[in-house]
Length: 260
Image (cartoon, rainbow, N blue to C red; front, side, top):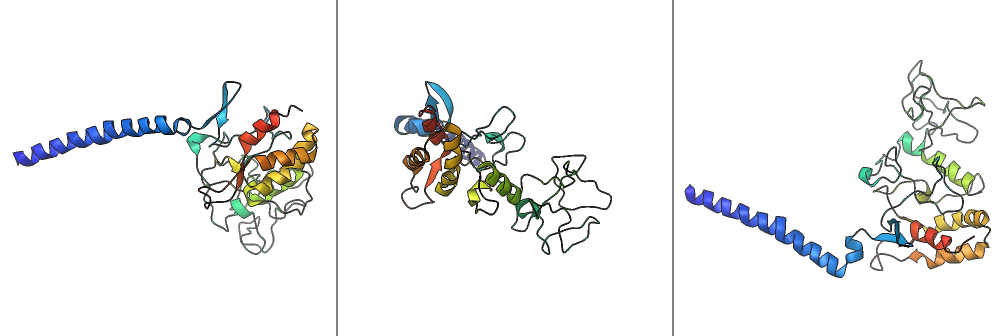
């Protein structure tokens, strides 16, 4: 018994030293020696000031949280009250028929004002026939299971207020913000979050659709902005993994260097 206890104690001490001290010191040392920038967060500096990380998305908005037309915008964020919050990283993981993802699709997942299945969407608006309403008493709470007697928020024109986080609403907002036609196709990464909610890149198609708006806001030739997008395309990881993309932070910093 004593022999077994001594063996267990010795292994505990040995593994504590190896995994708790030696391994962290070795990995930290190797990282600092050969991959210092990555080991320290891939920080991006401008004029000596840290302005972000090339690994994490961040918003480009005004003080009220509205997206700034003069900047390219990243993918949507699902990190709660504070968008692009690394402490709340994660995806929504909605199923393919969840109303919070696709809205209320008539005949598929619609629920009437009485809480019963419906063949039509009673909350449909002229702009969004798939509208998911929000509770009148809690404006940030979408209602996916209406109940009899429930009240819903409405706009001044009498239409229902739709949850802005659904894909249909995000698509509508994206088209309006970028001056696109109401039926223009929208890249999937423009209206869905990544698995982390902090993806720093957008697709080339997404960047190309935003380029005309950025060019107008900055009074730059579209060809200049488009060429800048092409110069900031990142290839596939290891040459074979994923798709080429555009890092929004580095692209916007390159835009700032153009001055206008």
